Length: 151
Image (cartoon, rainbow, N blue to C red; front, side, top):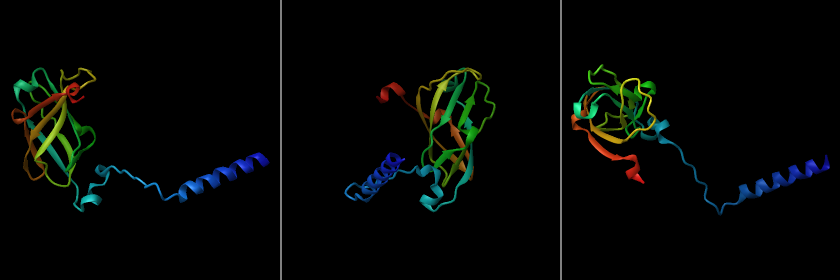
């Protein structure tokens, strides 16, 4: 019992010495995407995106995964969108403090129910907005480098 009490005292005393050491700066990193209203003072609103397909990109199917980036972050199931040769109007759902002018997606070509794990790279698309309704014309998107080119 004595050894346990002495051990606890040593741990407590050492922890207090380390806490009192002010020579080391304290670093705190917080994800701002979880509190953009608090960080910016602006209110979040939900935006819905619809797509104008482009056959050169879509092929047998195009899977888009929205990549969070200020002023928006993705909402639940609305961040993965499949666009097929016969577009069936899936919608992107994002929360934003302001309408975005550009959106980035990780993308891959795949049939609707294909289960392929890896995306190819980044697709950067300009956005047109009408209030909270966004339009993404896939023919205006820029295909970025494949992931292995980022190394």
